[in-house]
Length: 485
Image 1 (cartoon, helix red, strand yellow):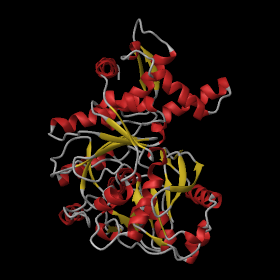
Image 2 (cartoon, one colour):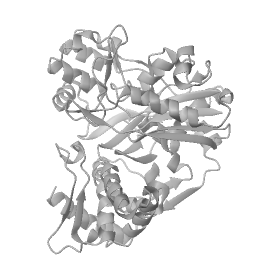
Image 3 (cartoon, helix red, strand yellow):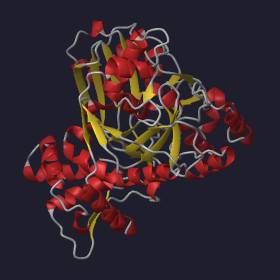
Image 4 (spheres, helix red, strand yellow):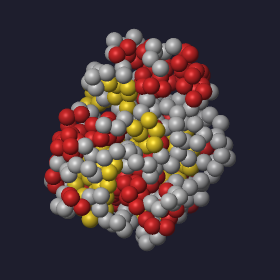
């Protein structure tokens, strides 16, 4: 069996699969980000508590786990000193304070550098003259940190590493010329390359669970680990979107779309260039805001009705399909945090109505869902303008447990949206699949071959086409949306 653990934005989840990649056990633990000194963070003690609770809740024989892998929220900043002590609280992908550094790096490198990437956080800390910067021995991400603690190996999978610093054309290491330019700019005194984790591609060995790591999780020592990955990479695996022109949308606390590229892409503002776990280039449309605003409303509705949130979600998603195509003049903005894709600099969610709007529950729920797709739709339109096309996109995450969001996303993106049987399992399942690939792959068997020939041959898929009336309604909704943003 193979174990995948993912530290997501709203929950930590463990999934165990068998050799045929079927889920045989799972457990989860809810956690939330907090503002620490004005920056979004998660407590690392809470991360360990959540992982231990997930492992303890598993009922399968833990001694039969042959391989495992750890995934986490992509990007962010965890700097450590020579003694292995964390120098500042974990800074997550949600923080947008590194805009000055991202702009300087973009100009220096001729590369559209996102503000949430690890190198942007490091350079911003240096620009701010933060006292911890001269003490930094290495930086990593959440998944990289957990993997290091479990194995002693300071490594990252290619997909996760591509959110730390740009990769080279082969996708097996960082871009040497760009590293040299950052060193020459003198942001930090250290050699930047020496601060970054080693890059590994999918299928490569990334160490074994040490005695101390096993004790922290309650697992047997000696389990093989695959390279740690980010949630973007596990989403690609979970949707079999790792070949050129394939794409997926991950719907959670953040919303992002990934499109695997056929050829290099010139820099586009708001579009990130990342990588598959095998190191192939990917265009990423990342939006800071996804389901958090919706979830807050569900908490209010649960207080009112006494129903559990899963029941409410199913009922209210169905109501959204009864709303008018343009939401009847109701407009929602789900900006719990800033949204660079749409030029929003501060978080302030709000529900508003145009004059004469028809304010009904179906229109309100439809507006909430469409607002979640607005940023991704904008980013994919930018890619289309530069010749990047999609025939179909695959969705994954808990949002797709019912068909309502899938239908409305198809209208918003203007392409068919497919959802697989495993969509609700999300990245933890994708991480378990990567662990299975590392343990079971044959000589010269690529990740693409493994997924297509061993994992997805019997996966059921539901594909919904964009409805013309819904598509036209979304265009009218976006006109109101953009006019009042």
